[in-house]
Length: 246
Image (cartoon, rainbow, N blue to C red; front, top):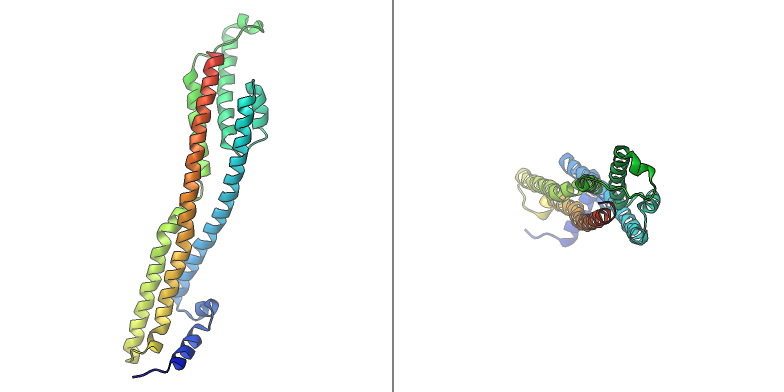
């Protein structure tokens, strides 16, 4: 049997309505559910991507400013003042945690030695540098958890959406074979609607997964760099503490 190309084209346009929105309206319930799920994953992923990119950009800028001030400053009390202004960078959280532990140990040393506390020229020494190190490690772990918040959704989107789209693909092919069996015809007009659903679901699954995968890998790389910066800052803080208070 020979099919007229214009007849096939007209039938395909009539089936799909000539647009994705018309296709969604005319698609079966299963295809609509699959596309709605993929749309949800895609929209939420893009919201997370934009929000996380803006935040990491702001963190990088504030981290550079804080490190520059920290390395030029002569007193921890001066750094504590600027740390209250740069609240986005995790380095200020590390500094506040280490500085708070240092301050507590100094106050404890003063209470244990009233004579030294009464003498302003006496330099008080701390006894437990490992306590400051643990405070810095706890703060770094909390900051990494805060930075990676919502990134699991991107990982889930990248892993699950291709399979959700594959389910729609399989369902569309099943519909095509069902149409062939009911009509007794193997013409393109009979199988076009099911094939269209299959192809659209496949494309939608990949469209949702690929940006999420790329963004997840990019953000995790940036967070690893921030973690390395936090580790370096912790070592600098500990070195200064050992030099001046032990």
